[in-house]
Length: 112
Length: 116
View 1: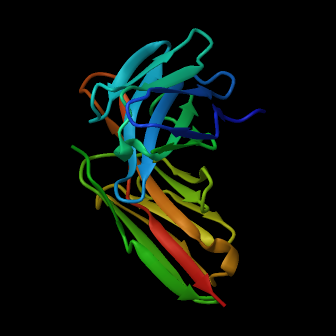
View 2: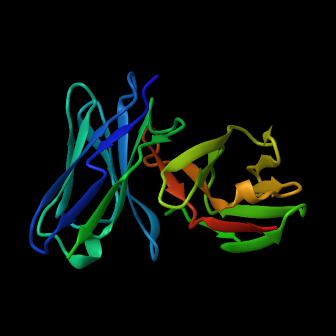
């Protein structure tokens, strides 16, 4: 079956801009989680959506937001980009938040 | 808040040798996952450990879980170069008592380099 698809794979943005990342989960999976990965901080949890509702949120500023659609696809938005937002953003899909998570290939965001 | 500690963070080993990566966590959990990440790639699921005493093996890798000690180990037997990667453990924890809201917390990862 198809895996988790993230688009785009690479993005270069300027400070102050905003960006939207997309994630299509595995068919049948209703839980979508987002993570930020940087060399210094490792994998940090951003938020989790389940059936269009945000159930969990990590310790990130309000500039980071997300949503989930009725088909379980999810988007993540970062507004007013800062240099420190440069990272690999990973999306994970699972049946539920306790279940094994399957990761997409990630979106590499570079803020200049 | 749940803390997940992996050690070592960096591991350089020779082919053919054995070694163990440790994953300690701070609160009660009976569900733990191990992932592998190659440079520039995403995370690949390796093992799912669902109960105390669980042991899973795949090729040269074996993972175990001791929920009483809050410890999981990933043992590498007779390492080969293809095992070079970063390995993460991730612990499932309940976010609110009485609910069904869980969260995965990852360790910082162990960068394994296997030298010929």
